[in-house]
Image 1 (tube, protein in one colour):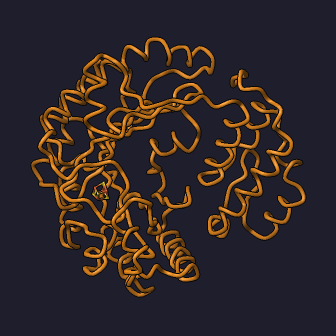
Image 2 (cartoon, rainbow, N blue to C red):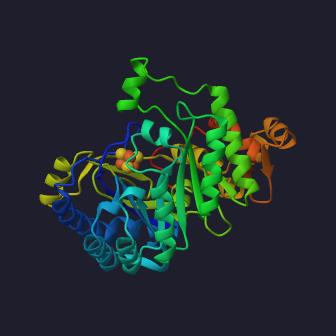
Length: 402
Ligand code: SF4
């Protein structure tokens, strides 16, 4: 798997809880598109060296299997702008004919014409930030749409030919009850999205919501209720036929998000746009988190990276364990082949207990969490990382994955 991520840093209005980089004004969106096209060009040159080197060392062909437009609100891009970006990507990169092309959309910003145009340009998956169907919760979160817009957006998406649609759902919103969460789930299931991402509200530093929390203006949901809500989400969605394949993600069979799996499997991806993070070979980079700084750098002909760091083999292994346990399972056999770590023996006696207690399934190739296991994922992750860290800390930074 190999992904391309594009960050579109504009929103009509900032949501109180959001710490993604985005600007409330779309004044500079046309100039942004021109600069983005240039960055795609610049990184296309880099691809000829770095990614192909990576292919040589890892046996991975740099054919993109997914393209993801995130943000921000990519649905603020005009269809013409989207078409130009898609064309530029196709010109500069090898993209699989059946690649997944996702675009995040705010239900308050779509029209039938726009969705049809995005579909015609090659976008084949939509992700709607629905969050809730309860008016007071949407107001609390500062969303620009109501429940009716979410319903209309799904109907427009289906009419435009999208057969792969995600909806985001938020729980543990102050004021939310088990009843309103059940209602939100029920309303969402009526719309039958192909994929659901369900997140507990996080109080991110630097957001208006965090400031309100610090001033005592918000009472967060208690840990017990948060846990009960998460259990309700898992039960409701799995009972409805969705497979849980990550702590927060549920999919109809065959509709898992390829782009997210690229992240969670520790695979490579290039990223474009202000604040975007990429991962090539064993090196992570992140672009300037400022439209001005990012633009200035691209205009001088340089990659707009604020910084980059290389992972040594031990860090790579720990990250892989962390990511895969939270997702569709630690590839036990691959870990042994790549790093020489026999998890079945390193994790004893805990592993036997976790299997007996129904937290983990130890099958032929993977160690993967059950629904019960996802509920205690953080605790299990810490134990796995400590156990492996104790036996695998002697590799030098210069070693690379074979
Ligand atoms: S629309 Fe999405 S990206 Fe924009 S502020 Fe709200 S949550 Fe953040």
